[in-house]
Length: 197
Image (cartoon, rainbow, N blue to C red; front, side, top):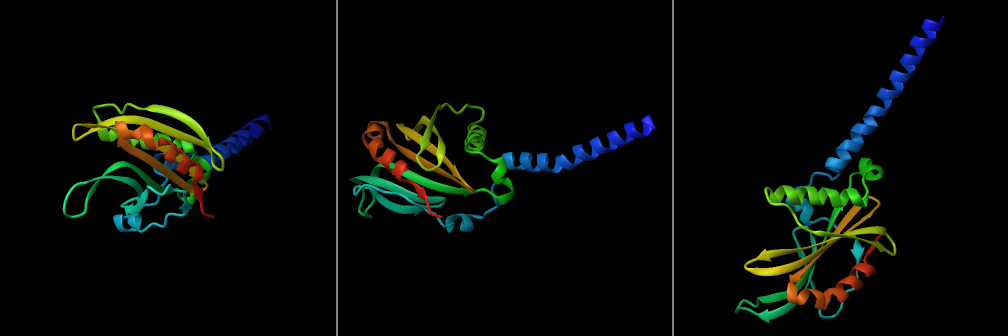
């Protein structure tokens, strides 16, 4: 009789362990790639469901992954091209439904950092990590870093916001001498950022 109880306990334990296994696999897949596969046309035409308040001196257009806000600088050529003082890019990443419960804003940040380090290998991505809070969406991570482009130093900040099945990256960039001047504008824009429901 004791042997039968022992065997029964082992079978119950084994069934419990194997029944939890699919959830661990889903969680693992969600940490490594939580987004639907989109081609470039789908990504470019993806609806950006948010609103943001911008100051009058900012202009808006689109880029391949979302919306682009900027402040023009000097007129450059006869084609009507201006250099820009600063840029702000907002891109959206939709998280697949099965991953919503397994994917936090911290995971969203870590996914970005992992891929950024891969793209720079063997160099390491150097940044400063800050944590803040959005009045509506709670925990927000911010990374700040500098980069050299065309022998000019650019300062960058990326704000990571996650709500329901949406992740948003708000990337502010500009020449270091312009960066702090327009930072109050950007802080107001990020504060006013609201996802349409």
